Length: 186
Image (tube, rainbow, N blue to C red; front, side, top):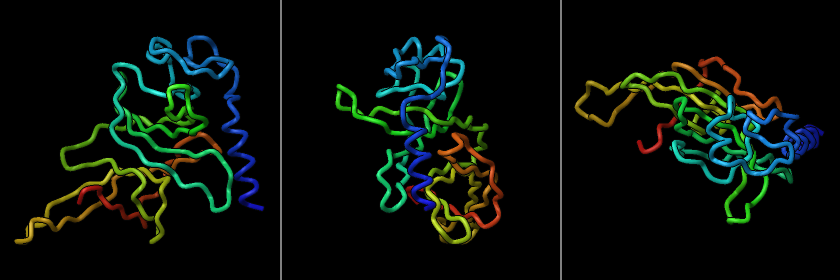
């Protein structure tokens, strides 16, 4: 029953009906892929359908969010993107393959990444909550090099964490207690 409800919510969220938006929002009522000019002039990126990023936007990293077992829903991913307004994490639904053979995405939620100190890293999809991997978690980790002889020994503290919620189309702030993250490449 729970997975059926998630499937229905996911299908409604991915149906292409993202609400009626004004022309300056960057999303068309028909749900077509927007032009670079429309993308760049959007007040918010939520609701924009795209298959590639326009100039001045750079994909930094990303990860797929696995679907629930047995669900036939459209996939989601988290993308770290450098935008004209700074770094953001986007929760995208992957809705189709474009004529150019690229996956078409719709931005469902956006998270503005706060400024990071030199010893902080943003981590996507590699955090566990209470010992269980949760690929929807985004966290800022503070890493400190151990004073031990082994310079590869690191400790991590979680400064801030969010969980992507596809059904609510938002990033929720979550408590940092019980969260442990693996830093990619370490």
